[in-house]
Image (tube, rainbow, N blue to C red):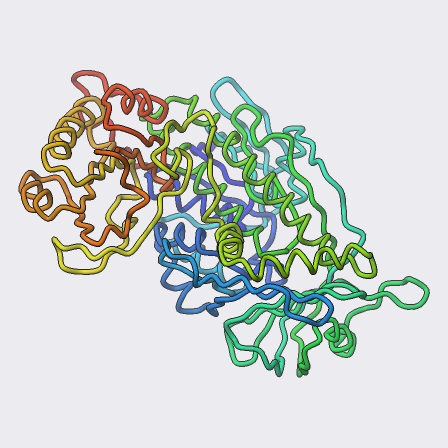
Length: 551
């Protein structure tokens, strides 16, 4: 019976990102998909800042940016008027203060190419039909392209197989929620559209919703709208004339010249009651589905894959306790629950039609439009930069407004040591943990930095990098020769990271903060114990991941 460390069921963006993440850590995996190829008729197009940060770490951000359409503004319109514009250019602590619109099929092709560079290829026309868990693994029954049945032994299985997940059914996880009354129409089109190409619009009126999203290519847009009904209440089959008629919901004069193809789909807001049973996990749409409001779905699945990927890799490599895997559901289920609720509320508000409450909605939007801090909060939420794991079992501490579980800010600093602009995230490794010490006191910063570096290297060799962030040129000039990398922040652009005295942060491979507080060795070691097993004496070097080819 063939064996692999991880079997991934489903080769959409979630499954592909998980496979790339595992291979980066040297973990063997197989990825299967029941479809013969990439599905061209896919709903997602928007990639948000947090996903682009993950793509940067995975090595696919550059081709996505080169091929995609940059979108800076999301405008919500009701009653044929602009109500609120969310400007992602207000995001100050990310390298990607914008969205990128690119058809999901192209995103998948780019991820497939990146995965192939690691030696793993998607196994097509291969469906999972049964799962049997044992004490130390899972036996999966799959149908192969020639119609035969094969058994695959895996240490772990992850279901990334979409809203109609077979894996979710096989492990008996309920999918709780409800369907929406409206059906939707999608189509990629050539449109004469008067608004700027860096703007996405989402409009609602008495007849429904209409979204116009710019795509790569001259006058190319994705159209998404609630399907119309005739006088008898029957759904109208979409065509160019129907799409043009429904475009009146926007209150904007545009002309649809051609549409590649229309397809219709149903929507629901649902979430699995849990993301794990034994050695089987759920990720992406297998665990949660919701409306396309704000373009959250694909991005949420990528976040699932990144979160689970580094944890699963560490447990398989023997560098982390198996209890670390409990934090996946604790962290991601709550995040998805909030996204499902947020998108449900947004869709309901835009679909009030003739409901008298629409006047309250418009008044609230007016307040939001006139309040820059609230607009910035919306931008952070939609971009998924605000997603946090605060209060969950594997994070501890706080420093000023930053709390353990938050994403580490990524300001652009001018590094006075190298005399170049640099992003904070680019100075930290993404394949292991980082202990970041921030402060400006020379004596106070150097001593704990050296002690903590020696302590972590002694107990967990190679597993934790140490970095220093300081506003003091004196600290930078005297510490650099010691071998500890230093980032000089003379302008205090990274102000949120500085507390009273010296502050320490344990930064996880997914760029979330595991520990925030004073540079107390005991507290830091207690937190590290949640993520890493100490290396026994005489096993130096065992903290690094071991290479593993595909099996």
